[in-house]
Image (cartoon, rainbow, N blue to C red):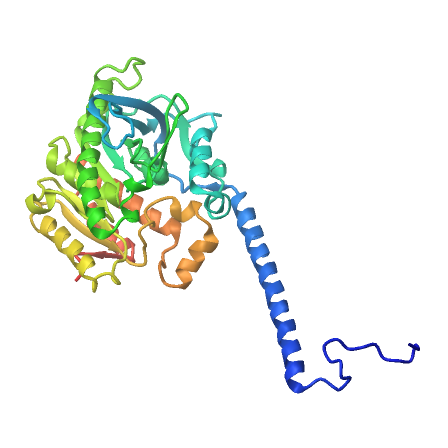
Length: 428
């Protein structure tokens, strides 16, 4: 074959000019290939942005009270109760308690870790790489405002106590901003995580206990979830009673002497988020040691719905305007109203417009802000994370100030004037 001869055309062996259909097909293939390449580049760029964000330090909102904050932990075993959720018969119930409290101003001591290293490792292992490495900040780079194992402030002889309960399998430390802020206003704040109920718990001996999927109501059908909730709620209220009793013992005779006489057990409140709010309602119904309570975006369950409450109580909700047309949503509001209507003086119902279910926790800050931005774009949430936490912390400490410290009641009514996002009264 001479150099002047044309090479055979494999796609068009006849040598004729390609038809319009074939030219279109080739362009289409090239276009798809280009789009695929652009998609790969876009995904790679997104993961690069997420990874950079993951490695960026973040500082939690500063407490608004004038007191510095200390933090310590205890692990307590309840020898009187067997853990029904444990795989091994005869396992005793246990809790890991996190305690935030007023402390002297720190000098050069580094802040407490948001979550200890062993807990971070366990959480990442059970969350998966996508969530822990790309969709969540590196928790080692989340900066708190607490000092580990500090002394108790001498400003007062004793301080009121607030029990904190996270929702479902959430960790107590997800609510560090709320806990630190309340402690800075002169409170002991005690939250706790429980094996087989909290998503993951690390015990002092290094054992990691993860919650089985069967213990998560969100993995079940509606009927199965309700049966599990009916089983979990008494366990959660029982755990709360146990923790309060251990705090009474600690206050009476702390072996180290640090906490002896420093907790005012006569001024005890409780607040909780989601299922922690339901636990708060039921605990305050069951235990007269509770003097005031706050349900943060939690549907009520248990006998409290039928019996009501006697203590001052605050319902603090996210924006559920879309849910009011749903029968399940209507029933939740009806149950809340049933409790609310029978409350004595000292009741308050607050909705934060534009807030979502996680606007009350650190999750709105430690989760990827690209994901949060997407939520804003599709209308799932419109409230800035720090703004939501600011409103929540102010309502929590002001409500407890009024009903545990005898602050003027009008301090609560003034808050609604400061925050245009706040709507008072039960939504209709």
